[in-house]
Image: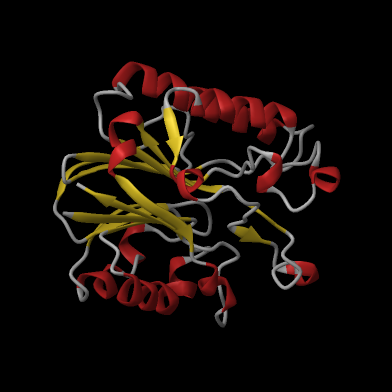
Length: 257
């Protein structure tokens, strides 16, 4: 059985709904995890997904944050605010689909290394690791965590190490925290198939996309129990070229279950 999972920071689902629906139609996605939906649950455009045969699990808030998972397969479980440090910010939603746990997450940005927001970002990442230690086993549990992690982990995940070093998105402290999370036992699905420098986010400013000045901050990480099932993973840069795009491109992983 082929099983496809995509993650996409849509940067407002209501502003991007036409692009998202067109992406689903062309890409044959089973599960789409969205971040920065920026809308309360009752205003989420669920009807557009339901018309395509998707159910939607939603955890949203007005103007900021928000996550949603759309699935063509039945939800076996839905949990929100799972990390325990969300502080009213809608950043996580867990679903169980086809026997696989999918955690859809929007990590804090951090704003600046000197700010309290940056301390919170580190707390969020470390709390995520503690949550996994308590609830999952990488060799036994079929687990996928996806989303906008707001950290580029390696030099090949940034357009310029010199320009990004010490800045938000590539600061040594947040990279160490993310590496600690990764070392729980994850496999970076994209790196199973792609070793080159690659990005999933480009600033709207300074013609960043045209100049390929980006960061890879959107991930699909899988437990060891799923490593051999993953057959491909790619970044769909074509979505970033469209009219009124998100500043992020979708990342897609293909599994053979």
